[in-house]
Structures are given as structure tokens and as C-alpha cells.
Amino acid sequence: MSTVTNSAGLGPAGIQGYDGGPLTHRIGILDEPLFWLGHLSSCVHAEEAEELLFGADHDAAGDFQRRLWERAEWPTFTVPLAADHRLHVVYRTFADDAGTDYLLHQVADALAT
Image (cartoon, one colour):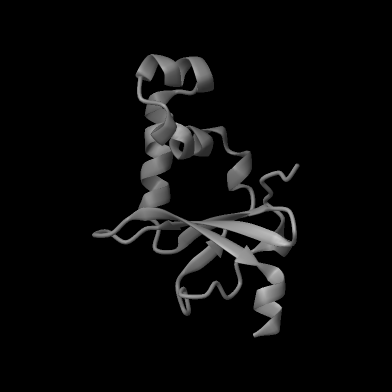
């Protein structure tokens, strides 16, 4: 089974369609419990469920997410998958078009181009 990683060797160098984009492989973001509260909050719709599942300080989590989305660079992390695939998660921090992109990438395809 693959795990989420903050390995510097799995950074999203040269993701197709993101040429010149402000991608920043954020070493250590995955170790931050407040990051996970914000990242997974779209799956949990009740404050009671968030408290039960995550046990985090909601004000601190909100402050952390606000700082994440106010950055000029786009925080990213990578999930290694089977068959030499990777899932890059990119936080687009545009003021008018913020969002999270999930990009499937096959390393062998990138090396062939």
C-alpha cells in the first residue's frame, strides 16, 4: 500500500500544464495535524464529527488554512502509487480561483518525452 510522503525526491518538478507555475514541494506539511484538518474537512460536514475525528483546535486550524491559502507559491505534496504512478496534490492559491488540483502522473511517460 502506498503512503503519503513528504520526501524531497518526489517533488512535482515539471507537471504538464503547470509550466512556470509557483509550485512549492512543502517538506513537512504532511506532519502538521492542522493541515490534515483543513485538507480532509471537505469530507466531514459537522463540527461535532470534526472534533471527534481530528480533535484539533478549530481556531488554530482555521488560522493555519488561511495562512496556507494566502501564500504566493502553491503548496504541493505527492502520493506514490502502484505501477510507477504518482498523485500530485496542488493547492492553487489564486485569490480569484483558489482550489485543490489532484493530478495523476506516470513517471515513465514523463521520462519518454
